[in-house]
Image (tube, rainbow, N blue to C red):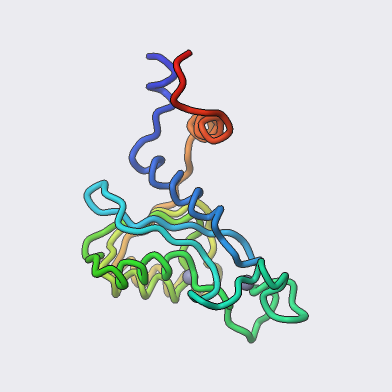
Length: 177
Ligand SMILES: [Zn+2]
Ligand SMILES: [Zn+2]
């Protein structure tokens, strides 16, 4: 098998690569997150975490809240950012795109608020790269899974595929050798 075939992303890897690319657009200082909603291998919407449309970005003002280094530095204040999954779902809403039966790829395991939104949007499968929930939140998450409201799968992109994709990003791609 030639390298091109070996390093060709699977569908799951392909959409997770897109979620990572979406994360590059993140404007919250907490950490970048990207999401892609997919149905029948078709991308319905992408999203990243950032302040609500029309509101100044955390990256632009240099802080999330004045005196705080980032949105997740406070136990009391909610994140200024609309999370990536919520932004992708909101985009579908704006454009009248049905999310029923869709799958979402997210670079970070959805928080419980986003997971509830995902469930209510009819999205049945969640693929994520990095774990997020801890403690009681894991119990809440697992309760939804046990109730068959949603399935969650942790996944990663193979190193060779990521490396190959990064080469595609830094060099012109469509040149004859
Ligand atoms: Zn922020
Ligand atoms: Zn969230």
